[in-house]
Image (cartoon, rainbow, N blue to C red):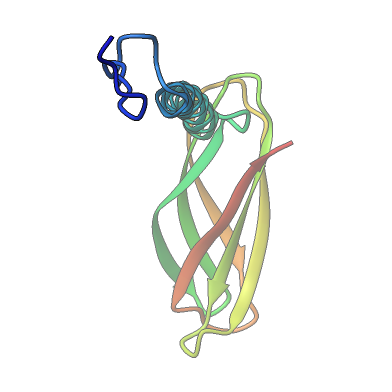
Length: 137
């Protein structure tokens, strides 16, 4: 017998299963993939909620016109679900930016699109009008 006690045969790498590092890497990849899928689902859900939304009541100011020193005419376009009621707030501004008039307008008609011209009374001459918000009831 000619064996040397100090020399041992090295086992071939990868022949007897994965090492602990390879198992940990695989688990990390699986956990990372699951977290990525969950995160994409949350982002998609938030996007759909933001676009479709529960608040299906949107308004846009088309134009405004200063009628006199005491009033401003504001043309609003409202998009909503037919059964939805809502309120839009419009304000009139003076040349220096101060608010000189404000009006809350309620829309309860059973149509999905409305065009309405609203008159906002002012305390002094306005130079601009602004649609502040539109919210469903």
